[in-house]
Image (cartoon, rainbow, N blue to C red):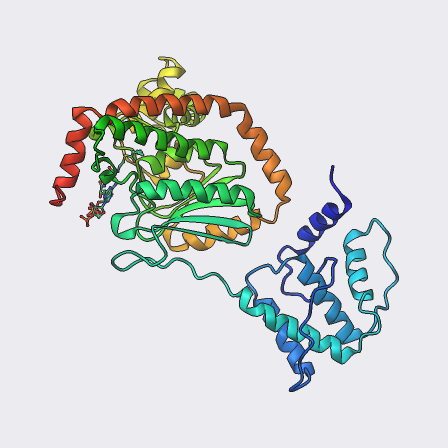
Length: 433
Ligand SMILES: CCCC/C=C\CC(=O)SCCNC(=O)CCNC(=O)[C@H](O)C(C)(C)COP(=O)(O)OP(=O)(O)OC[C@H]1O[C@@H](n2cnc3c(N)ncnc32)[C@H](O)[C@@H]1OP(=O)(O)O
């Protein structure tokens, strides 16, 4: 059941959206501890104006409680005690504002001004914009192979091995699982995966296959299959919307997992490559199920348009040539081009196939995507979560079964001569073996 407090906070959140700049548009309830100890100089009218200006520059939403307090102090500092008629019970937003202002009673204007200035100054440090991960010129970036940040209701998990094209080590699989567990419980609305540097991710670190334990390669394949299954299960069961911010080329498991994401935003520099054939491997990340499924509907509609073969600008050769042979074949062919034959897709192609939600020019990619995501976090979080759950719940059991089957097949593949030779080929080209 929704409580009145939740209703108020929901309304307040909507009302506050994008209104940080104005000290007048500020809701919520409890009093905040203030810095009352200004003794050196009293805050002047100029100090107040500067503080108001500073609030306008804040990039980070300080939350409704703070904004409501700021509103009340500003009104008290400029107009004195609350002089408005009490709003009706159902006028929730104005009632919250009125309550906050009235709660200041007969606090002198000067003190309110001083409190406003002190509050802004104490919060300003915390409102600095986040420093984005800088592309590494060379070598690893500080902060570990995986960087997890949480702000503005977005938890971001960043692959941070730019010198290795963000290949995923065994430790990183473990750390991503831990990060997802934490993100499922934190106050974030969205969870984002992205990469630092030129690549989004070059997939599984192929040296993961080289440290064979004393028990032998069978044991290695068995433990890898368990790790992979647990890892993919975390994505299947994750309770909030998952967003991939694909900043550059994506390879292997970083591509297949995208079928389990809710939004996939790609730079036009990104490519999508699953070289399982050349590596002697088979698909994972539930892609053997999600890829044919997601690529299906777009092929279906294009097939209908395709009766005018040659006119439809987005028809591929394969689509046209398969017309009339049955949709099952048609759908499978497109996924098969990627998963069996390792065809690399451009961002635009991946978008046309339904793998990518939207493609952005690389020059504006970060700005546009993060602005969009920040706007999405202003939506009522419980509604977002519920919608996500009803969309995901139907297919979850099936996804777990697919994951188990794929991991079983891979356990065999990893022991095959085809796979071993491919990994040896890759590692020996740089004198790693
Ligand atoms: C628990 C197990 C789960 C298994 C599940 C998943 C399966 C997969 O993900 S399969 C896909 C595996 N990935 C690949 O096959 C990609 C391999 N890498 C490449 O083909 C190229 O490196 C790439 C095309 C990504 C980039 O090429 P270049 O631009 O020419 O760069 P370099 O090759 O010089 O790479 C720089 C540096 O990074 C190392 N690197 C890159 N990718 C990987 C990787 N996947 N594993 C290990 N190392 C990788 C590369 O060796 C270079 O290292 P140095 O030689 O030390 O500079």
